[in-house]
Image 1 (cartoon, rainbow, N blue to C red):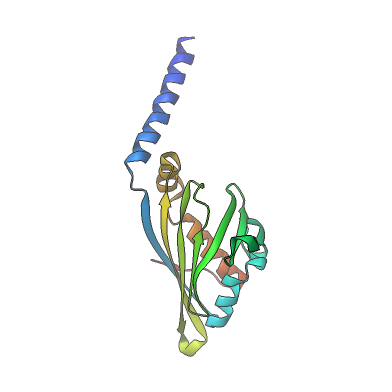
Image 2 (cartoon, rainbow, N blue to C red):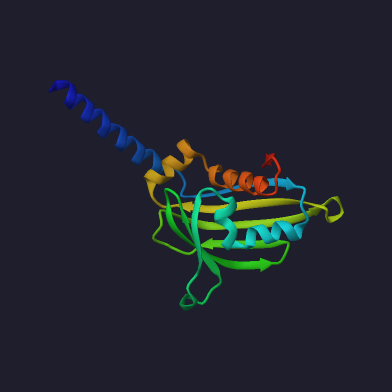
Length: 175
């Protein structure tokens, strides 16, 4: 019985430590990653904006649907494994150059924007895709987990690796 009590106290202390450390971490963060692809800007643009095809090349995305017309904004809703439904609205779009997708659900434990910037390379035969995440993690437990267990770059890295694989390329990620 004494061991069980000690184990329960240790678990409770661990949970309290996670919450306290998470509460002390900043809610907001900015992370940038980029990848060079042997694809012209138009092909990269097509891949990142044709959300109906995301489940074909993004292994974490189960389904995608357009935002309901009643919302009055363009965008889509991703159903992501282990996370759930994430509505994303387009807040800025310059074809083949820049796209800004904003998480449109303030009730999620996280939020923010992904800013995609495409720069032509090699006379337009290749591209550099740079993604900047300006995020906010509201829940202190989720903040702790995203910072110390998954890492703030994990989702972005998985996305860029999947995009490279879609084009039959190997990802070489840069800050």
